[in-house]
Each structure stands twice: as structure tokens, then as C-alpha cells.
Image 1 (cartoon, rainbow, N blue to C red):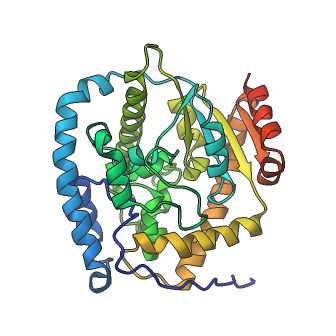
Image 2: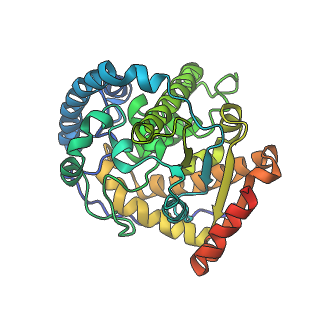
Image 3: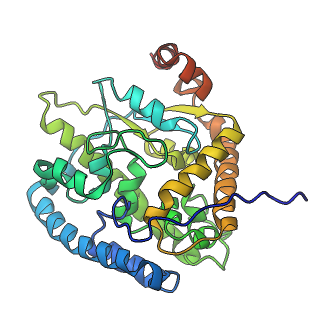
Length: 350
């Protein structure tokens, strides 16, 4: 069997506390995360990030309590549009580009970066959004220089990762050495009710519980986002959600059970381009979130295994989607003629 190549990564951003996807975590999810993974953390290297996130968890909890008192009755009763549009595809295959383009349509609503980073308190924090965004994030994304800010479209999975305290494949960005053992099942959750979950997995006996919590937090977050937009609209009907998180590519079965009328757009790109871009992403952003030092082999295997997992699961589940509810587009087509590519999506979905 041919040995996999190993990409070389350069350690950086050790003392940086900005740009961490756990910035909006609250106390209970954070305590649970630390209780599970305290042995895995490289404390001597990243103790300052633990201190920062611990302080933030206290502040976020106090704000979340205020938000719950003021708004929980409203967002818990918020209806969701029955036909959300999910943008699928491996990270670095063009999902962000497509998300940004389609989000220009005012008929869509979408998760913003500020909502994703502060999922428990973004309603209360809205008056301070610009100031807080400048403190916790850079002006541009480190991996591709795309503009960052509180209002730009963002991945809903970031918000759910904070709400659940790491029930997400994205937690592997911080703990790459534990990815296969602890976070692999969080892609599809298909073994949540199966006896096939490996006994060596840290969460094998709790996977069903984790799935239920992920699903509850996912729906809660979507309700909060929808409620936020509904507050400023005279139209009582909820607007259609435009959602983008590459890990959803492995969750077609789950998403169809939750939203049987959902629409899906898959964007794909040459595998070599995806690998090189993913490696660049890991080498420029993951270091902002690291809580342990991965080896080059850990990081390379994470990228390659994720590509294989997402591709295989999508190909296995693609036939479950009604042909009128799925559209596939290549990154090259979108880049060469974005208007025609977007028009084809609108034509397909009517």
C-alpha cells in the first residue's frame, strides 16, 4: 500500500487568543469539555487560551441568562421555513464563495459570523457587535484574505460547536491528535443508535446522547437566527434559511429527517486543489485554535481522512435526495461564470 505524503506545517500564533471558535462558549459546555479532555491539552503551551476561554465562558453565561429571560419565549416558539437550502462540499472546495454569492439575495436569511461566534447571546450583544468583532477577530480570514466581520455569512456549525461544548468535528481543529478517537462520529452521527461504535471511542456509550444534544442545539440556533431576522420584518412567515457548513455533506440522512423538503447545492473541486487549499487552511488558521501540538502526520491525515469520509458519505446518500432538490456545480464553473452558475441553481429549484 502506497504511503501517504506528509505536508509540513509550521507552528505559529502560540500566544494568540483571538479567532477561536469557542469564544462564545458558556460555562456548562466548557466545563464538560475540560473534564473530558484536560489530559489531552498541552497546558504548558496553551494555558493562556484555557484561561481566556474560561473567562469568556463566565461572561457568556451571564449574557445568555439575560437573553434567555428576555427572549427565550419568542425564539423557542419561532417557526422555521420548511425548505432550507444547504450548501454542501468539502472545505476549501468553494462553499464560502458560493455562500457569499447566494446570500446577496434578500429573500434568504443566513447565519452571520457574530451569531456563530456568540450563539448564546448575539441578540443582547447586537448593539456592541462592531466593537466586539474588532476585538476578537481579524479584518480578513488568515487562510484566503476574504473579508471578515460580524455581518458576513458564516457556518452554523461554529455556533453549534460552542452551544454543545465541542460536539462537532470542528473540535478537532483544537485537538487534532484526538480526531479519529473522539470526533470522527460527529460527522454523520449514523452510529448514534448502533452497537458498532468502537469501544475505544471516548464517547462510544454516549454518542446517542451527543446526537440528541447536537440536534436540539442545531434547531435552537436556527430558531434564534430566524427570530432575529423576523423581528425586523413585518412578514410573519419565516424566511428561507441559506446554510453552509461543509460537515453537513455527511449528514444528508439527518437533514432530510429534520427538513424533508430541504434543497441541497453541492460544489466540488479538483481533489489536489482541495488538498493544497485545506493544508494551507490548517497551517494558517488551526494554530489560532490549537490546544495541543499536532504532528505533521496528524494534520495531514486529518485532511485526507475528512475528504474521504465526506465524499463516501455523500455518494452513499445522494440518491436519498429528490432529483429536483439537488444541484451540483463545479468550482471552476462558478469561478468562470458566477452569474450563469447561480442562475442554474435558481432554475433548478424554481
